[in-house]
Length: 421
Image (cartoon, one colour):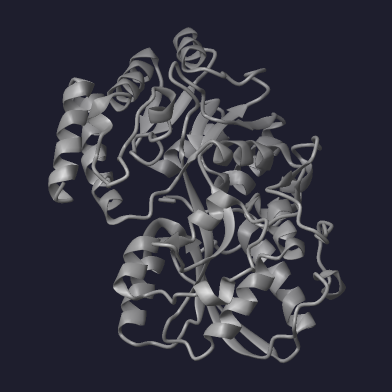
């Protein structure tokens, strides 16, 4: 996922995530594995899945969760339990800014650095980093280890049939809304537009091709064919961009500053936004303080089908230069085991890739539903030329009033030219 905003917030928001939204009918995501266990909200060394071999050695890992946020708290809790369970294992943790982590990893690894041994991040750069030789091929180590995992997560961990990541969770954007002001989330694009027009829905949206991608499914669009050729000009995408322009004309506010959009939603200036699960701790804390109900629903469906936001997979990548590659894979597999993944679901709002993990929180359930209907992020070089070209098209439509059909045609042609199609 192209994640522009990290999950940040006070550590005290962890408990809020688990309680403030209230209980709901639980679901098990994605499937239950034989013998799978479900952990309670807090972990102790005795709660680990039975049978994993003790880990011995030293590992250095990177993450970009953001100090004090829900994800950091969950990570600290799980690492504390794993350290206690594996007394001969040393785990060194280094936080990197999300804006730097991909570039720094690739630069260091290609320079021959042996540490860090592994890092966790979305599959935004999975293709480019595997193609550059900056990720270890761990296909052999994962053989038979991912039974029951989400098919989307498994696919999102591979390039050309080879595994370069241990899948941890799924991420797709959805519709956050104020359940106190909006009793029922708009299920269709027509209902959303009508609500914006009559003022009942005060909508904020990112002016960004990642966040706007899901509307293409609502209008029957397809970005690329199986060869990687852009076919967005054959229908659907122009309708989606016209819908964005219609929303703006009706009163929706488009933002180029994601933090400004988040702040307006936190303070009630807007009552609906399209964004991701990484905002869970911050938004839950803000809405609890306001005494209002926070809710999530998939992006509305359109005349041609369900929305299909890009669904990314977060996971653990291994340094090909590390002398501890096998240990790093074993550690990553423990991190995504049912027991420990339950902690990330409960306290960080993760949508689990692992089987047997219970999802009770309605916020997490909303994002799980969004991910289930999303489009798995393509792992090919052609996608690299989507962002700039379709971002320019979106800006032209929203800022200059350019005809959406013409804007999409230009974007698709330019994308294909850049890709040699």
